[in-house]
Image 1: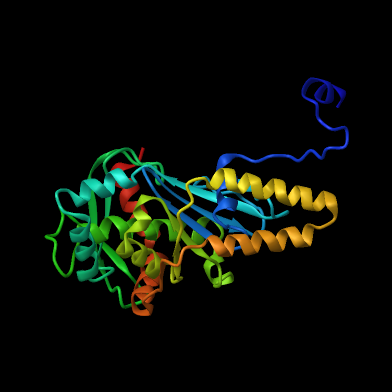
Image 2 (image 1 turned 135 degrees about the vertical axis):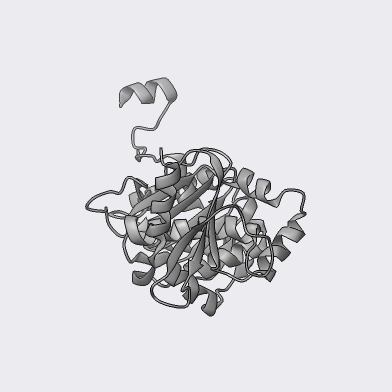
Length: 296
């Protein structure tokens, strides 16, 4: 438009491209390009983003859905949780992070589920309150059951509050992504990435729980300027398309993202993944307990 040329000196032949928000651009900057790719951000609040091959016919109320900034006809679903790092630190208490990690490593998976809410939770919508714990029965059977118990079990080989606060978050993310947002997407795209970032991602034992729950290898990322980087990628692809070199631009993007992925990688323990897979199929029953006691 002449106004922009006269006011700001834009070239009359410059290309104009539509833009995206910070969350979608951050997803691109951290490498979420293909269907089934998942990013978990463990910060003050926790988020989980997943690339979808199409728009859900009935978008679930549990997730925000964005058009993918650089993949036409693809979308990104985002889950948001309030109780993130502050809650994990509250559970850690006076223990060091090494002691937190030891508690995770030395306890067995899938014996209990505990939800900790140091503040109101968004997903599901719950009031702040004391921890809610259920004992998991038949974890080695297809018919997992949950039995409500009062208080918290004593930390030991069968129960770890440190494990519980991480397990519950990972299982919740898996449940919502794979059952409500895009049913079966983990099985449909088994080669999809599982990327983790944020302060919690620096802990190897936390990464291991997410790897076991999702049944995927985990790559830890350090991308402090991911939103700006994703916006730059988007501008690069727009320029490449304008010049007729889109294929080369897409390959450059893939190569650059592959080169930025950290070598901090965890691989799933298949026996733990099998346990978590069975629990996740019954996770909705645990949510009914939570909503019944604390729903808002």
